[in-house]
Image (cartoon, rainbow, N blue to C red; front, side):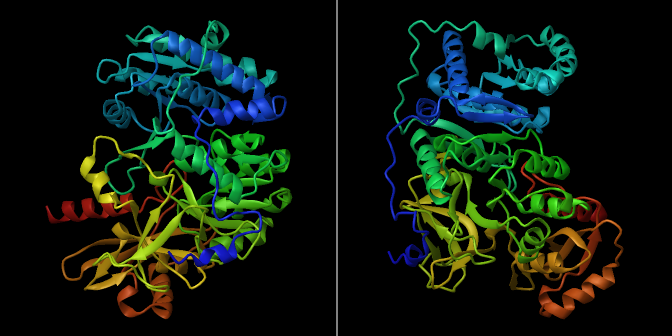
Length: 558
């Protein structure tokens, strides 16, 4: 293949890497051997070292093995970013079982699908989520509940107050559960380590099953091997020049592929401290950056929007940040420029998808950065553009579907052989993302194949209109959606959240679009909202808005 992107690699990035044939839990164990007394986690000011986290994961693994958890089993994690997540994640892997990280914001109804589909019979969670977990016992394979007090990982002044909130929840649900109930700290404390050895796993064994967010339909379980996740961690570490002198802030959830590998596994491979935030708030993140001075963080565009729109953002010191890696949704030029102007941090756009673990492209850390581009393929990643209609390879500058060949590719979708077959073809991963490559090998996404709007036979890519939305001085955030239309097939509607204190009219915005777009691309409707539906990592859910419009149309016709 022609790989023009090699010319633009940073000097520290080779064309190819060596990936160790090791189990995923080896990332933690190896770093604990190299950096035993270095800080791994910083959680509300309390620090735990690599040695401490490793030893706790060993002890928990031994206790889990004593319960019969091992190869062929699946353990769900419903936990916020915290030391408990890291300990549990690596402990489950050490038993040989598969980790199934789930979104803590899911309802009982949504969790019922995930437990039934994954066949996970054990969950590790916190008391706050027992209300939606306990009703699943008897309705799903779930029969074992392990709960962790977050207060176990907090500094002493917060410990008692937090425990008073958590303990009554455990007492309330324990007797109602009908399941075996265990305290995580007790399992660690009373573990029998006599003869303990982590499970002997093959690099190609199943390690983690992450469910797609369902943003393009029904959620699918994506099965990732030990090797794929280890390889991706090495790619991220190399591309970002991660090392023990850096410090990363993790606000993206660990249950998501982006948060899991970019802000947990790769930093652990590098021996870095991780500042863990259990949930996102713009002010909370700004305060944490000011206090802990991370050198790197990872975000989605809506996080940058929220930080930029803090009225007093200038009072927080962001100068420690060398890079803010941005992915999971398109980073518009307006969002990037506004964030960098307000904070001084450098936003570096990248690209990934859970079917390839996570990040597999990014703009160079230090080198040539093209605004609007998702960057260059990582070492050992081949990428090309193929025609949506014919599947033929396309030359630079022409739009088509982005397809990839990477050592980090998924094993497949759980129990969905046809879906797997349609996505993995002849060694290539068909991403469903529309874009193009320029002459230098930088890639660009114009849209999702499934988000394409067809107005009277004309193809309209929503991202082009999204770019215009964010350039408007009154806009905080917004998104473009195609909605059914009897005459045109589809018409274009935009949803907008205005900045605080701003007012506007629909006519004002439609005139703005007319000034910048050809007639068939001009939205026919503008709806102002106070907030927009978002996924757990902050991606605006275009699908949800489209479904709302379809439902309204159906009710009107009925």
